Length: 117
Ligand SMILES: [Zn+2]
Image 1: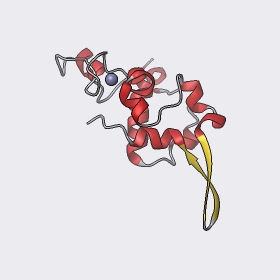
Image 2: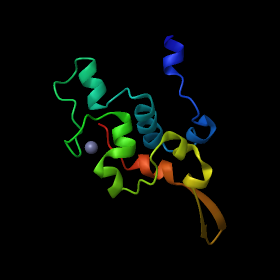
Image 3: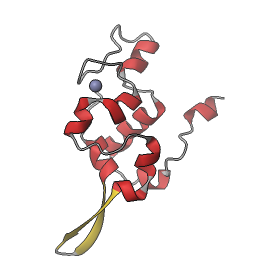
Image 4: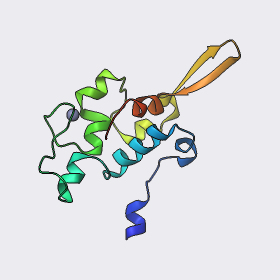
């Protein structure tokens, strides 16, 4: 059961492990709903206040941070489900510099801009 709980389904971890550390850490916390999220901290008795530190309007769950919070709109959110985030057509953006084309992972960029500390 514990093992099952820790497993993150449908993520494509091969993609996520290449992200910068901050994006990885925030993504995994949001996707699992555990870690330094107020709703989780409230559930385990570490804080009295489960509300989001950005908008203060809803419980700070992983789904809230990833898909609902107004802060997400400000930093370029364009997904409404985890499946959307896993869909290459929705996360990959081709860019070009002097060396040629490369792919930007928009989900990595998004989670890099979220601070859960
Ligand atoms: Zn919020």
